[in-house]
Image (cartoon, rainbow, N blue to C red; front, side, top):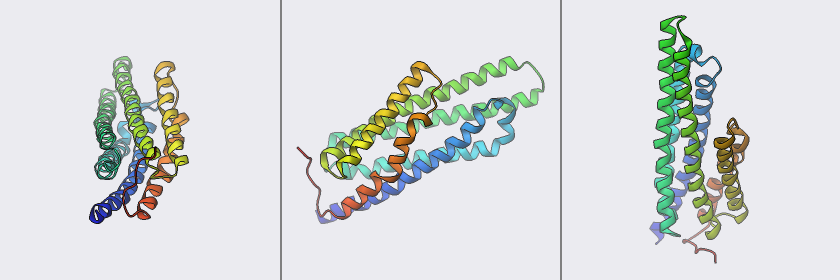
Length: 231
């Protein structure tokens, strides 16, 4: 038991670091890509900024790898409290990188489209704009699906933390509220269109960066054995 709990503590520490890595890499990657591939003049500007697009893509890949790492190292911790929820959380987190690949491929398609547009010179813009709109729409819909998958996993995670008191319940409630705001904002964006993710995602981003990983790390360092779910 002692060895198992020590492993859980180590996993929690690694998960905390990967939480931060995933959030930072995703933020940098999405900012780089969004500032170029969905800019008003993306057909002219994307290929000349090829390096920034590639760096953004690599940061997104790094974030996706960190997400997989989070899921893998947290599973042995969470299964002490509820194996079913631990498996479900693992599954949802493993789906996220697959959707990230779709977002990356759409961005690279815009890069290639921009290259062909520049090589073609001042030709018919309509055909290129139509393809560009299609690739941008693919990114947007993939992002909405990503958010819904992410929020489902987050709800499972924070719900389990609330039941087990691995972190103070106020923090778990904040995580649940933030996930609800993010999923609700994504639904509104799909139904009403043109609501920026930043308008409803900042709360959850801040919450994940500052609170759950650090608090989970601290709590497990103070615990000699796994706790029991609260009634």
